[in-house]
Length: 86
Image 1 (cartoon, rainbow, N blue to C red):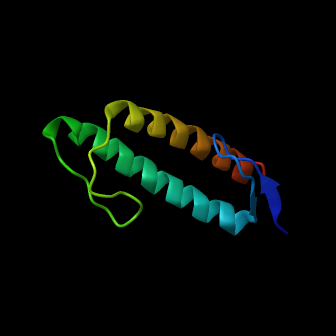
Image 2 (spheres, helix red, strand yellow):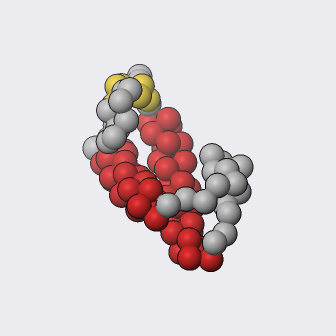
């Protein structure tokens, strides 16, 4: 059975079961890893191109830091929901 969840900093609630939450958690962790990697490369004047939502644009450091903070909070929420037994 799916439940409604409201994820930090997202306007629309999600409807998910345990498997959906696990999939979402994996995606958020991958995005976090990508943003953390980008944050270390910002000073290199690199342009980042990825197939998972990133494009060939230069990201501002404050945008990256905000996204890392948001994803960290979202991951903690999802892990909490999974730990609570859905």
